[in-house]
Amino acid sequence: MSVAEPMPDDVGPWPVDLASDETTTYRTGRERIVDVLRDRVLSGVLPPGTKLNLDALADEFGTSRTPVREACLALSQDGLVRVAQRSGIVVIGLSSEAILENFALMAALSGLAAQWAARGITERELRRVRELHREIKVAAAVGDDIATLNWEFHREINRACHSPRLQRMLAEAGRLIPRRFFELFPEHVPCSLDEHDALVAALGSRDETAARQVAEQHFDSAAALLRRQFAGRSGT
Image 1 (tube, rainbow, N blue to C red):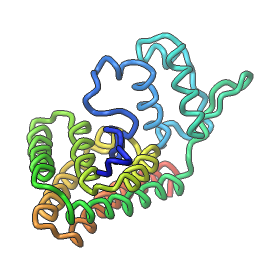
Image 2: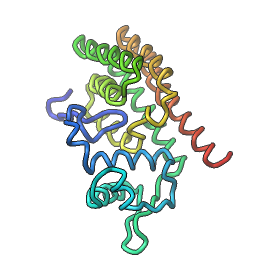
Image 3: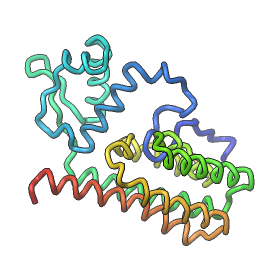
Image 4: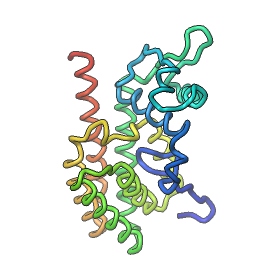
C-alpha cells in the first residue's frame, strides 16, 4: 500500500463505510438503520414509490424518530429516497438494471484486485486470508453469521492488491451493493464458500488468471440471484 496515499480500514466489497473492528454499540444507531434500509431498497424489498413511516420504523428499530429521519436523509444523498415536507419520505430506489450494473462493476474491479493480489500478496497477507477463510467455514457450518467475516476476507484480498486507487474505486462501487447479502440470500452460502476455496487456492499458487476469474464469478453469481429476484417481483 502506498505510503503517500494511505487507505482507510473500511474498504471492502459490500460494507465500505465502517471498519469491521468498530464496537457493536456504534452500530445500533443511525448507521445500522442506514444499513438495513439501504439493503431493503437495493434488494427490492422496499420498491420505488414506497412511503416510509418514521413512527413504524422507529418502533421496529427501538429508537426515536430522529435517528430514523437522519438515516433517511443519508439515503437521500445516495439518491435512494426523496425527502419532502409535504409528501414525506418516498423510496426512489435504483432500477434493476442500475443495480445489476453495480454488480458488473464490482465483478470487474474485484477481479482486477484479486489478479493484482495474486501477483503481489505477501506471506503475512496470505496467512490472514487463509485464517479468515477457515473462520468463515467454521461459522457457516454451525449456522453463525458470516457477513462480517466475509467482509474481512474480501477486504484483506483488496488490500493485498496494493493499489489505493483501485481500493477507492471498489469502495465507491460497493456503496450500492446490498451490505447483508447472505441474510437476503442464505442459499448463496454453499456456492460462495466453494468460490472462496478456489480464490484462496489461486492466491496461494500466485495464479493471476484464476484469481481474477474466480473473483469475477463470485459477483456474477450474486448478480444472478438478484436478477432472479427482480424477475420474480415483476412477474416475468
